[in-house]
Figure 1 (tube, rainbow, N blue to C red):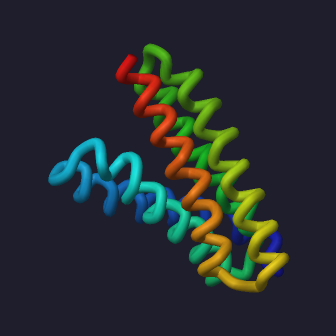
Figure 2: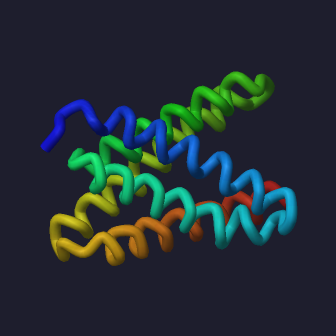
Length: 130
């Protein structure tokens, strides 16, 4: 296993997700945040980790760190959102890594992390409406 490849894996996943989600969000809105962005992000994080032969949870951590820094730079409640991003993406990565070790299936690892991520985003969107 390439010990430091989790850094470019997480950064590449963040860049790819930013591009794809940006294109989709400009066309669809809130449904993308809940249902589409999570699958884009979970597939990118896990796929780049596997392609680069590195740790799935660590790649997810780096993704969360990149997203967290971006959120923090936005100001306002950005620091809190950044910390939540770091924690949530790390949790999704731990789940994906565990599922991959258990099943050796990238598809099941992505699907499990997606379900967690989608549920989380749905909760956040619902809470933000209140």
